[in-house]
Length: 303
Length: 275
Image (tube, rainbow over all chains, first blue to last red):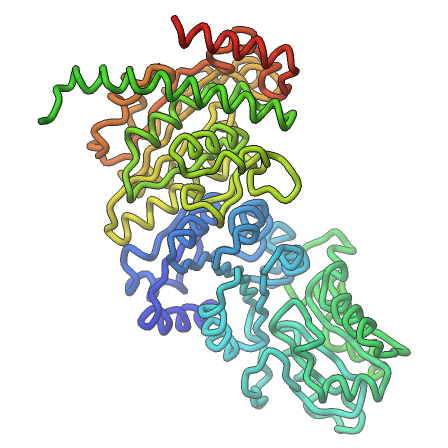
Protein backbone atom coordinates (compact mmCIF):
# COMPACT_ATOMS: atom_id res chain seq x y z
CA UNK A 1 0.00 0.00 0.00
CA UNK A 2 3.03 2.35 0.18
CA UNK A 3 2.96 2.79 -3.55
CA UNK A 4 -0.79 3.35 -3.47
CA UNK A 5 -0.42 6.10 -0.89
CA UNK A 6 2.35 7.69 -2.93
CA UNK A 7 0.13 7.72 -6.03
CA UNK A 8 -2.81 9.07 -4.06
CA UNK A 9 -0.75 11.88 -2.56
CA UNK A 10 0.78 12.70 -5.93
CA UNK A 11 -2.69 13.08 -7.32
CA UNK A 12 -3.77 15.16 -4.35
CA UNK A 13 -0.75 17.48 -4.40
CA UNK A 14 -1.70 18.91 -7.75
CA UNK A 15 -5.12 19.96 -6.45
CA UNK A 16 -4.52 20.70 -2.77
CA UNK A 17 -0.85 21.41 -1.98
CA UNK A 18 0.40 20.14 1.35
CA UNK A 19 3.63 19.58 3.23
CA UNK A 20 4.90 16.03 3.62
CA UNK A 21 7.23 15.05 6.45
CA UNK A 22 8.80 11.62 6.64
CA UNK A 23 10.70 10.17 9.55
CA UNK A 24 13.46 8.94 7.25
CA UNK A 25 11.24 6.22 5.76
CA UNK A 26 9.86 5.65 2.30
CA UNK A 27 12.89 4.26 0.44
CA UNK A 28 11.81 2.80 -2.91
CA UNK A 29 8.27 4.06 -2.45
CA UNK A 30 8.10 7.81 -1.93
CA UNK A 31 10.74 8.95 -4.42
CA UNK A 32 8.12 10.04 -7.00
CA UNK A 33 6.44 12.20 -4.38
CA UNK A 34 9.75 13.74 -3.37
CA UNK A 35 10.54 14.52 -6.99
CA UNK A 36 7.29 16.43 -7.47
CA UNK A 37 6.93 18.15 -4.12
CA UNK A 38 10.32 19.86 -4.00
CA UNK A 39 10.92 21.75 -0.77
CA UNK A 40 7.52 20.70 0.57
CA UNK A 41 8.78 17.14 0.89
CA UNK A 42 10.94 17.09 3.97
CA UNK A 43 12.86 14.23 5.50
CA UNK A 44 12.52 15.18 9.15
CA UNK A 45 15.07 12.58 10.13
CA UNK A 46 14.84 9.97 12.82
CA UNK A 47 12.99 12.20 15.23
CA UNK A 48 9.32 11.31 15.34
CA UNK A 49 8.47 13.57 18.27
CA UNK A 50 9.83 16.61 16.51
CA UNK A 51 8.21 15.59 13.24
CA UNK A 52 4.73 15.54 14.77
CA UNK A 53 5.16 18.86 16.56
CA UNK A 54 6.59 20.49 13.44
CA UNK A 55 3.58 19.18 11.53
CA UNK A 56 1.33 20.69 14.20
CA UNK A 57 3.13 24.02 13.88
CA UNK A 58 2.70 23.96 10.11
CA UNK A 59 -0.98 23.08 10.50
CA UNK A 60 -1.40 25.86 13.04
CA UNK A 61 -0.21 28.20 10.32
CA UNK A 62 -2.80 26.81 7.94
CA UNK A 63 -0.69 24.33 6.00
CA UNK A 64 -2.17 20.86 5.55
CA UNK A 65 0.52 18.43 6.63
CA UNK A 66 1.00 14.70 6.23
CA UNK A 67 3.55 12.74 8.20
CA UNK A 68 4.89 9.31 7.35
CA UNK A 69 6.62 6.67 9.38
CA UNK A 70 6.58 3.01 10.19
CA UNK A 71 3.36 2.12 12.00
CA UNK A 72 4.69 1.73 15.53
CA UNK A 73 7.05 4.71 15.18
CA UNK A 74 4.21 6.87 13.91
CA UNK A 75 2.07 6.73 17.02
CA UNK A 76 3.91 5.18 19.96
CA UNK A 77 7.03 7.33 20.34
CA UNK A 78 5.29 10.64 19.58
CA UNK A 79 2.05 9.89 21.41
CA UNK A 80 2.28 12.94 23.63
CA UNK A 81 2.94 15.13 20.61
CA UNK A 82 -0.11 13.68 18.86
CA UNK A 83 -2.15 14.20 22.02
CA UNK A 84 -1.02 17.68 23.07
CA UNK A 85 0.04 19.35 19.85
CA UNK A 86 -2.35 17.83 17.31
CA UNK A 87 -5.53 16.50 18.87
CA UNK A 88 -5.97 18.78 21.88
CA UNK A 89 -5.45 21.73 19.55
CA UNK A 90 -7.73 20.35 16.83
CA UNK A 91 -5.11 20.60 14.11
CA UNK A 92 -5.60 18.72 10.83
CA UNK A 93 -2.38 16.73 10.80
CA UNK A 94 -2.60 13.47 8.85
CA UNK A 95 -0.45 10.63 10.15
CA UNK A 96 0.48 7.73 7.93
CA UNK A 97 1.76 4.58 9.62
CA UNK A 98 3.06 1.85 7.37
CA UNK A 99 2.87 -1.73 8.56
CA UNK A 100 -0.22 -2.13 10.71
CA UNK A 101 -0.53 -5.25 12.84
CA UNK A 102 2.18 -7.85 12.31
CA UNK A 103 3.01 -6.61 8.79
CA UNK A 104 6.71 -6.20 9.55
CA UNK A 105 6.84 -9.87 10.56
CA UNK A 106 10.26 -11.05 11.66
CA UNK A 107 11.48 -7.49 12.16
CA UNK A 108 10.06 -8.06 15.61
CA UNK A 109 7.67 -6.53 18.11
CA UNK A 110 9.33 -3.10 18.00
CA UNK A 111 8.11 -2.84 14.40
CA UNK A 112 4.58 -4.14 14.96
CA UNK A 113 1.55 -1.91 15.47
CA UNK A 114 -0.90 -3.98 17.48
CA UNK A 115 -2.55 -1.30 19.59
CA UNK A 116 -2.25 1.77 17.36
CA UNK A 117 -5.84 2.64 16.61
CA UNK A 118 -7.09 1.64 20.05
CA UNK A 119 -4.70 4.14 21.59
CA UNK A 120 -5.16 6.88 19.03
CA UNK A 121 -8.94 6.70 19.20
CA UNK A 122 -8.80 7.75 22.84
CA UNK A 123 -7.74 11.20 21.59
CA UNK A 124 -10.26 13.94 20.82
CA UNK A 125 -11.27 14.25 17.19
CA UNK A 126 -9.01 11.51 15.91
CA UNK A 127 -10.31 9.59 12.91
CA UNK A 128 -8.59 6.35 11.90
CA UNK A 129 -8.60 4.85 8.43
CA UNK A 130 -7.65 1.22 7.79
CA UNK A 131 -7.76 0.30 4.11
CA UNK A 132 -8.56 -3.32 3.34
CA UNK A 133 -7.31 -3.29 -0.23
CA UNK A 134 -4.79 -1.21 -2.13
CA UNK A 135 -7.67 0.27 -4.09
CA UNK A 136 -9.09 1.75 -0.88
CA UNK A 137 -6.12 4.02 -0.38
CA UNK A 138 -6.98 6.61 -3.02
CA UNK A 139 -10.52 7.34 -1.80
CA UNK A 140 -9.35 7.27 1.81
CA UNK A 141 -6.59 9.80 1.15
CA UNK A 142 -9.14 11.99 -0.63
CA UNK A 143 -11.49 11.80 2.36
CA UNK A 144 -8.71 12.50 4.85
CA UNK A 145 -7.49 15.51 2.91
CA UNK A 146 -10.82 17.33 3.15
CA UNK A 147 -11.48 16.49 6.77
CA UNK A 148 -10.62 19.17 9.33
CA UNK A 149 -9.93 16.45 11.91
CA UNK A 150 -6.64 14.82 12.80
CA UNK A 151 -6.33 11.52 10.98
CA UNK A 152 -4.33 8.32 11.08
CA UNK A 153 -3.93 6.07 8.06
CA UNK A 154 -2.89 2.52 8.92
CA UNK A 155 -1.29 0.87 5.93
CA UNK A 156 -0.69 -2.82 5.46
CA UNK A 157 0.06 -5.18 2.61
CA UNK A 158 -2.56 -5.56 -0.04
CA UNK A 159 -3.77 -9.16 0.29
CA UNK A 160 -6.62 -9.05 -2.18
CA UNK A 161 -7.26 -12.61 -3.41
CA UNK A 162 -6.86 -13.29 -7.12
CA UNK A 163 -10.14 -13.14 -8.98
CA UNK A 164 -11.90 -11.17 -6.28
CA UNK A 165 -13.65 -8.01 -7.40
CA UNK A 166 -13.19 -5.28 -4.83
CA UNK A 167 -16.52 -3.60 -4.15
CA UNK A 168 -16.75 0.15 -4.58
CA UNK A 169 -15.17 1.93 -1.65
CA UNK A 170 -17.31 2.87 1.32
CA UNK A 171 -16.33 3.10 5.00
CA UNK A 172 -18.73 0.21 5.63
CA UNK A 173 -19.40 -2.34 2.91
CA UNK A 174 -20.29 -5.94 2.38
CA UNK A 175 -17.26 -7.78 1.04
CA UNK A 176 -18.82 -11.17 0.48
CA UNK A 177 -22.46 -12.12 0.92
CA UNK A 178 -23.23 -15.29 2.81
CA UNK A 179 -25.84 -16.74 5.09
CA UNK A 180 -23.39 -17.71 7.82
CA UNK A 181 -22.25 -15.64 10.77
CA UNK A 182 -22.01 -11.89 10.08
CA UNK A 183 -18.28 -11.21 10.22
CA UNK A 184 -16.81 -7.73 10.41
CA UNK A 185 -13.18 -7.46 9.33
CA UNK A 186 -10.69 -4.63 9.76
CA UNK A 187 -7.78 -4.22 7.36
CA UNK A 188 -5.91 -6.52 4.97
CA UNK A 189 -6.41 -9.59 7.17
CA UNK A 190 -9.71 -9.78 5.28
CA UNK A 191 -7.80 -10.97 2.20
CA UNK A 192 -6.92 -14.53 3.29
CA UNK A 193 -10.38 -14.97 4.82
CA UNK A 194 -12.03 -13.90 1.59
CA UNK A 195 -9.78 -16.23 -0.35
CA UNK A 196 -10.84 -19.13 1.86
CA UNK A 197 -14.54 -18.30 1.61
CA UNK A 198 -14.89 -17.46 -2.09
CA UNK A 199 -15.38 -21.07 -3.09
CA UNK A 200 -17.71 -21.96 -0.22
CA UNK A 201 -21.45 -22.32 -0.64
CA UNK A 202 -23.30 -19.07 -0.03
CA UNK A 203 -25.61 -20.76 2.45
CA UNK A 204 -22.66 -21.76 4.57
CA UNK A 205 -20.03 -19.08 4.29
CA UNK A 206 -19.94 -16.08 6.59
CA UNK A 207 -21.48 -12.79 5.60
CA UNK A 208 -18.26 -10.76 5.44
CA UNK A 209 -18.28 -7.02 6.00
CA UNK A 210 -15.47 -4.53 6.14
CA UNK A 211 -15.13 -1.31 8.08
CA UNK A 212 -12.34 1.14 7.28
CA UNK A 213 -13.16 4.27 9.30
CA UNK A 214 -12.93 4.33 13.06
CA UNK A 215 -14.22 4.83 15.66
CA UNK A 216 -17.20 2.63 14.94
CA UNK A 217 -20.37 4.66 15.22
CA UNK A 218 -23.81 3.15 15.30
CA UNK A 219 -25.07 5.98 13.09
CA UNK A 220 -22.70 4.88 10.33
CA UNK A 221 -23.59 1.19 10.40
CA UNK A 222 -25.46 0.21 7.24
CA UNK A 223 -29.05 -0.88 7.75
CA UNK A 224 -28.32 -4.18 6.00
CA UNK A 225 -25.52 -4.96 8.45
CA UNK A 226 -27.71 -4.18 11.42
CA UNK A 227 -30.53 -6.24 9.99
CA UNK A 228 -28.41 -9.35 9.61
CA UNK A 229 -26.90 -8.96 13.07
CA UNK A 230 -30.35 -8.50 14.62
CA UNK A 231 -31.63 -11.51 12.74
CA UNK A 232 -28.77 -13.86 13.58
CA UNK A 233 -27.98 -12.49 17.05
CA UNK A 234 -24.37 -13.39 16.28
CA UNK A 235 -21.36 -11.45 15.20
CA UNK A 236 -17.71 -12.18 14.61
CA UNK A 237 -15.11 -9.42 14.52
CA UNK A 238 -11.67 -9.99 12.99
CA UNK A 239 -8.84 -7.53 13.45
CA UNK A 240 -5.05 -7.54 13.58
CA UNK A 241 -5.07 -5.48 16.76
CA UNK A 242 -5.22 -6.34 20.43
CA UNK A 243 -8.68 -6.83 21.91
CA UNK A 244 -8.42 -3.90 24.27
CA UNK A 245 -9.62 -0.79 22.46
CA UNK A 246 -10.21 -2.74 19.29
CA UNK A 247 -13.13 -2.80 16.91
CA UNK A 248 -14.60 -5.87 18.64
CA UNK A 249 -15.09 -3.88 21.81
CA UNK A 250 -16.30 -0.82 19.90
CA UNK A 251 -18.92 -2.73 17.95
CA UNK A 252 -20.14 -4.64 20.99
CA UNK A 253 -20.51 -1.39 22.88
CA UNK A 254 -22.39 0.29 20.05
CA UNK A 255 -24.74 -2.64 19.55
CA UNK A 256 -25.49 -2.92 23.27
CA UNK A 257 -26.10 0.81 23.46
CA UNK A 258 -28.57 0.45 20.61
CA UNK A 259 -30.36 -2.34 22.45
CA UNK A 260 -29.35 -5.02 19.96
CA UNK A 261 -29.48 -8.35 21.74
CA UNK A 262 -26.75 -10.82 20.92
CA UNK A 263 -26.35 -14.47 21.76
CA UNK A 264 -22.77 -14.76 20.58
CA UNK A 265 -19.94 -12.33 19.88
CA UNK A 266 -16.79 -13.91 18.52
CA UNK A 267 -13.56 -11.96 18.38
CA UNK A 268 -10.43 -12.89 16.48
CA UNK A 269 -7.67 -10.47 17.44
CA UNK A 270 -3.96 -10.16 18.02
CA UNK A 271 -2.67 -11.91 21.11
CA UNK A 272 0.79 -10.42 21.07
CA UNK A 273 3.61 -12.96 21.27
CA UNK A 274 2.40 -16.18 22.92
CA UNK A 275 5.57 -18.14 22.12
CA UNK A 276 7.90 -15.19 22.67
CA UNK A 277 9.45 -15.89 19.27
CA UNK A 278 9.59 -14.01 15.99
CA UNK A 279 8.44 -14.91 12.54
CA UNK A 280 6.56 -13.79 9.48
CA UNK A 281 3.24 -11.98 9.56
CA UNK A 282 1.60 -15.31 8.70
CA UNK A 283 3.36 -16.94 11.66
CA UNK A 284 2.15 -14.29 14.09
CA UNK A 285 -1.36 -14.48 12.67
CA UNK A 286 -1.36 -18.23 13.23
CA UNK A 287 -0.18 -17.74 16.80
CA UNK A 288 -3.09 -15.34 17.33
CA UNK A 289 -5.55 -17.57 15.51
CA UNK A 290 -5.96 -14.81 12.93
CA UNK A 291 -5.15 -17.03 9.95
CA UNK A 292 -8.06 -18.07 7.76
CA UNK A 293 -8.30 -21.70 8.99
CA UNK A 294 -8.41 -20.54 12.60
CA UNK A 295 -11.07 -17.94 11.85
CA UNK A 296 -13.16 -20.52 10.04
CA UNK A 297 -12.85 -22.85 13.05
CA UNK A 298 -13.98 -20.02 15.28
CA UNK A 299 -17.00 -19.68 13.01
CA UNK A 300 -17.66 -23.42 13.25
CA UNK A 301 -16.70 -23.97 9.62
CA UNK A 302 -13.41 -25.79 9.86
CA UNK A 303 -12.08 -28.99 11.23
CA UNK B 1 13.06 63.35 13.56
CA UNK B 2 14.67 60.02 14.42
CA UNK B 3 16.51 59.80 17.71
CA UNK B 4 20.05 58.50 18.05
CA UNK B 5 20.81 55.02 19.31
CA UNK B 6 21.82 56.42 22.67
CA UNK B 7 18.62 58.43 23.00
CA UNK B 8 16.62 55.38 21.99
CA UNK B 9 18.21 53.28 24.72
CA UNK B 10 17.55 55.96 27.32
CA UNK B 11 13.91 56.04 26.25
CA UNK B 12 13.66 52.25 26.50
CA UNK B 13 15.20 52.30 29.95
CA UNK B 14 12.92 55.07 31.13
CA UNK B 15 9.73 53.59 29.75
CA UNK B 16 10.53 50.01 30.71
CA UNK B 17 10.95 50.60 34.44
CA UNK B 18 7.36 51.64 35.22
CA UNK B 19 6.05 49.04 32.78
CA UNK B 20 7.93 46.34 34.62
CA UNK B 21 6.93 47.54 38.06
CA UNK B 22 3.24 47.52 37.15
CA UNK B 23 3.58 44.12 35.54
CA UNK B 24 5.34 42.51 38.50
CA UNK B 25 2.82 44.04 40.90
CA UNK B 26 -0.10 42.64 38.89
CA UNK B 27 1.59 39.27 38.46
CA UNK B 28 2.18 38.86 42.18
CA UNK B 29 -1.36 39.92 42.99
CA UNK B 30 -2.79 37.51 40.42
CA UNK B 31 -0.77 34.58 41.74
CA UNK B 32 -1.61 35.47 45.34
CA UNK B 33 -5.34 35.77 44.58
CA UNK B 34 -5.40 32.39 42.93
CA UNK B 35 -2.99 30.82 45.43
CA UNK B 36 -0.78 29.61 42.60
CA UNK B 37 2.99 29.17 42.55
CA UNK B 38 5.44 28.99 39.65
CA UNK B 39 6.28 32.59 40.51
CA UNK B 40 10.06 32.27 40.37
CA UNK B 41 10.08 31.09 36.76
CA UNK B 42 7.61 33.80 35.82
CA UNK B 43 9.79 36.52 37.27
CA UNK B 44 12.88 35.20 35.54
CA UNK B 45 11.33 35.65 32.10
CA UNK B 46 8.87 38.50 32.58
CA UNK B 47 11.37 41.17 31.52
CA UNK B 48 12.02 39.33 28.27
CA UNK B 49 8.33 38.88 27.53
CA UNK B 50 7.65 42.57 28.16
CA UNK B 51 10.61 43.77 26.14
CA UNK B 52 9.83 41.40 23.31
CA UNK B 53 6.15 42.23 23.05
CA UNK B 54 6.43 45.98 23.65
CA UNK B 55 9.62 46.86 21.78
CA UNK B 56 10.58 44.11 19.35
CA UNK B 57 7.70 42.10 17.94
CA UNK B 58 5.88 43.32 14.87
CA UNK B 59 2.57 42.51 13.25
CA UNK B 60 3.74 39.36 11.44
CA UNK B 61 5.67 37.93 14.36
CA UNK B 62 4.57 35.02 16.52
CA UNK B 63 5.49 34.04 20.04
CA UNK B 64 5.46 30.57 21.56
CA UNK B 65 5.87 30.11 25.30
CA UNK B 66 7.48 26.70 25.45
CA UNK B 67 8.01 27.03 29.20
CA UNK B 68 4.26 26.99 29.64
CA UNK B 69 4.48 27.20 33.43
CA UNK B 70 5.31 30.88 32.91
CA UNK B 71 1.77 31.42 31.65
CA UNK B 72 1.25 34.12 34.27
CA UNK B 73 4.03 36.21 32.76
CA UNK B 74 2.45 35.85 29.34
CA UNK B 75 -1.01 36.85 30.56
CA UNK B 76 0.43 39.85 32.38
CA UNK B 77 2.36 40.86 29.27
CA UNK B 78 -0.81 40.75 27.19
CA UNK B 79 -2.58 42.70 29.93
CA UNK B 80 0.18 45.32 29.80
CA UNK B 81 -0.37 45.61 26.05
CA UNK B 82 -4.08 46.21 26.64
CA UNK B 83 -4.88 42.93 24.92
CA UNK B 84 -6.19 41.14 27.98
CA UNK B 85 -8.79 42.69 30.22
CA UNK B 86 -7.98 43.04 33.90
CA UNK B 87 -11.21 41.27 34.78
CA UNK B 88 -9.91 38.19 32.98
CA UNK B 89 -6.80 38.12 35.15
CA UNK B 90 -9.04 37.61 38.16
CA UNK B 91 -10.11 34.31 36.63
CA UNK B 92 -6.56 32.89 36.60
CA UNK B 93 -6.86 29.18 37.46
CA UNK B 94 -10.61 29.52 38.15
CA UNK B 95 -13.27 27.11 36.92
CA UNK B 96 -14.31 27.97 33.39
CA UNK B 97 -11.35 30.29 32.83
CA UNK B 98 -9.25 30.46 29.69
CA UNK B 99 -6.32 31.50 31.85
CA UNK B 100 -5.06 28.12 32.97
CA UNK B 101 -1.78 27.38 34.64
CA UNK B 102 -0.40 26.67 31.19
CA UNK B 103 -1.50 28.53 28.04
CA UNK B 104 -4.44 27.31 26.00
CA UNK B 105 -4.62 28.08 22.29
CA UNK B 106 -7.55 28.85 20.01
CA UNK B 107 -8.90 31.91 21.81
CA UNK B 108 -6.30 34.70 21.78
CA UNK B 109 -4.33 35.67 18.68
CA UNK B 110 -1.18 36.12 20.73
CA UNK B 111 -1.35 32.57 22.07
CA UNK B 112 -1.05 30.47 18.91
CA UNK B 113 -0.35 27.13 20.59
CA UNK B 114 -1.06 25.36 23.85
CA UNK B 115 1.97 24.38 25.88
CA UNK B 116 2.67 22.92 29.28
CA UNK B 117 4.50 19.66 28.77
CA UNK B 118 8.09 20.74 28.26
CA UNK B 119 9.76 20.08 24.94
CA UNK B 120 6.70 20.77 22.80
CA UNK B 121 6.75 24.52 22.20
CA UNK B 122 10.07 24.65 20.40
CA UNK B 123 9.25 21.96 17.82
CA UNK B 124 5.89 23.60 17.17
CA UNK B 125 7.60 26.97 16.77
CA UNK B 126 9.96 25.30 14.33
CA UNK B 127 6.94 24.18 12.31
CA UNK B 128 5.52 27.69 12.37
CA UNK B 129 8.84 29.14 11.21
CA UNK B 130 8.99 26.49 8.49
CA UNK B 131 5.55 27.61 7.32
CA UNK B 132 6.83 31.17 7.01
CA UNK B 133 9.84 29.97 5.08
CA UNK B 134 7.87 27.76 2.69
CA UNK B 135 5.35 30.52 1.97
CA UNK B 136 7.90 33.30 1.87
CA UNK B 137 5.97 35.18 4.50
CA UNK B 138 7.46 37.99 6.57
CA UNK B 139 7.88 37.87 10.31
CA UNK B 140 9.73 35.86 12.89
CA UNK B 141 8.74 33.19 15.35
CA UNK B 142 10.08 33.74 18.85
CA UNK B 143 10.13 30.80 21.21
CA UNK B 144 11.00 31.01 24.89
CA UNK B 145 12.25 27.81 26.48
CA UNK B 146 13.41 27.19 30.01
CA UNK B 147 16.92 25.89 30.62
CA UNK B 148 15.85 22.70 32.39
CA UNK B 149 13.61 22.04 29.39
CA UNK B 150 16.71 21.22 27.39
CA UNK B 151 16.80 17.89 29.18
CA UNK B 152 13.94 16.93 26.85
CA UNK B 153 15.16 15.07 23.78
CA UNK B 154 12.52 16.67 21.57
CA UNK B 155 14.22 20.06 22.00
CA UNK B 156 17.40 18.68 20.53
CA UNK B 157 15.45 17.05 17.72
CA UNK B 158 13.92 20.43 17.00
CA UNK B 159 17.30 22.14 17.10
CA UNK B 160 18.77 19.65 14.64
CA UNK B 161 15.81 20.19 12.31
CA UNK B 162 15.84 23.99 12.61
CA UNK B 163 19.57 24.21 11.93
CA UNK B 164 19.52 21.73 9.08
CA UNK B 165 16.62 23.54 7.42
CA UNK B 166 18.26 26.92 8.06
CA UNK B 167 15.22 28.42 9.69
CA UNK B 168 16.41 31.99 9.94
CA UNK B 169 12.85 32.99 10.77
CA UNK B 170 13.22 31.47 14.24
CA UNK B 171 14.59 33.00 17.42
CA UNK B 172 15.10 30.64 20.35
CA UNK B 173 15.29 32.30 23.73
CA UNK B 174 16.56 30.28 26.68
CA UNK B 175 15.61 31.43 30.17
CA UNK B 176 18.84 30.40 31.85
CA UNK B 177 17.93 30.84 35.49
CA UNK B 178 19.72 27.70 36.59
CA UNK B 179 16.82 26.13 38.44
CA UNK B 180 14.27 23.45 37.78
CA UNK B 181 11.53 21.74 39.77
CA UNK B 182 13.57 19.75 42.24
CA UNK B 183 17.04 21.23 42.21
CA UNK B 184 19.42 23.33 40.19
CA UNK B 185 20.16 22.43 36.59
CA UNK B 186 23.72 21.71 37.67
CA UNK B 187 22.70 19.37 40.48
CA UNK B 188 20.14 17.54 38.40
CA UNK B 189 21.78 17.23 35.01
CA UNK B 190 25.09 19.12 34.85
CA UNK B 191 23.43 21.56 32.46
CA UNK B 192 25.21 24.77 33.39
CA UNK B 193 27.15 24.83 30.13
CA UNK B 194 24.10 24.87 27.90
CA UNK B 195 25.41 27.51 25.48
CA UNK B 196 28.32 25.50 24.03
CA UNK B 197 26.12 22.44 23.74
CA UNK B 198 23.61 24.34 21.61
CA UNK B 199 26.37 26.10 19.71
CA UNK B 200 27.77 22.70 18.75
CA UNK B 201 24.82 22.38 16.37
CA UNK B 202 25.84 25.48 14.45
CA UNK B 203 24.20 28.64 15.68
CA UNK B 204 26.02 31.29 17.63
CA UNK B 205 24.68 31.41 21.19
CA UNK B 206 25.33 34.83 22.69
CA UNK B 207 24.21 35.46 26.22
CA UNK B 208 22.64 38.58 27.61
CA UNK B 209 21.49 39.88 30.96
CA UNK B 210 17.83 38.92 30.80
CA UNK B 211 16.87 41.68 33.20
CA UNK B 212 18.54 44.58 31.37
CA UNK B 213 16.04 46.01 28.88
CA UNK B 214 18.63 47.85 26.83
CA UNK B 215 20.90 44.82 26.60
CA UNK B 216 17.91 42.68 25.65
CA UNK B 217 16.86 45.20 23.02
CA UNK B 218 20.33 45.27 21.54
CA UNK B 219 20.55 41.49 21.52
CA UNK B 220 17.19 41.12 19.78
CA UNK B 221 18.03 43.63 17.04
CA UNK B 222 18.63 43.48 14.15
CA UNK B 223 15.76 41.09 13.64
CA UNK B 224 17.30 39.28 10.71
CA UNK B 225 19.63 36.39 11.42
CA UNK B 226 22.72 36.52 9.26
CA UNK B 227 24.27 33.15 9.99
CA UNK B 228 21.76 31.03 8.10
CA UNK B 229 20.89 29.34 11.38
CA UNK B 230 18.08 30.15 13.75
CA UNK B 231 19.02 32.84 16.21
CA UNK B 232 19.59 31.62 19.74
CA UNK B 233 19.90 33.89 22.75
CA UNK B 234 20.78 32.70 26.21
CA UNK B 235 19.08 34.90 28.78
CA UNK B 236 21.09 35.08 31.98
CA UNK B 237 18.30 35.45 34.47
CA UNK B 238 17.53 35.10 38.14
CA UNK B 239 14.72 32.90 39.32
CA UNK B 240 12.35 35.06 41.35
CA UNK B 241 14.10 38.18 40.06
CA UNK B 242 13.43 41.38 41.95
CA UNK B 243 11.93 39.84 45.09
CA UNK B 244 14.73 39.27 47.58
CA UNK B 245 13.25 36.30 49.39
CA UNK B 246 12.45 34.54 46.14
CA UNK B 247 15.66 35.10 44.21
CA UNK B 248 17.54 31.92 43.41
CA UNK B 249 15.33 29.90 45.72
CA UNK B 250 14.05 26.51 44.68
CA UNK B 251 10.89 27.15 46.67
CA UNK B 252 9.93 29.92 44.27
CA UNK B 253 9.41 27.33 41.55
CA UNK B 254 6.27 25.84 43.06
CA UNK B 255 5.18 27.62 46.22
CA UNK B 256 2.53 30.36 46.19
CA UNK B 257 2.77 33.60 48.14
CA UNK B 258 1.08 34.03 51.49
CA UNK B 259 -0.32 37.40 52.55
CA UNK B 260 2.80 38.45 54.43
CA UNK B 261 4.94 37.45 51.46
CA UNK B 262 2.82 39.44 49.07
CA UNK B 263 2.96 42.53 51.25
CA UNK B 264 6.72 42.25 51.66
CA UNK B 265 7.17 41.74 47.93
CA UNK B 266 5.02 44.75 47.09
CA UNK B 267 6.92 46.88 49.61
CA UNK B 268 10.21 45.84 48.02
CA UNK B 269 8.80 46.65 44.62
CA UNK B 270 7.58 50.07 45.76
CA UNK B 271 10.94 50.84 47.31
CA UNK B 272 12.75 49.87 44.16
CA UNK B 273 10.41 51.94 42.02
CA UNK B 274 11.06 55.03 44.20
CA UNK B 275 14.80 54.51 44.32
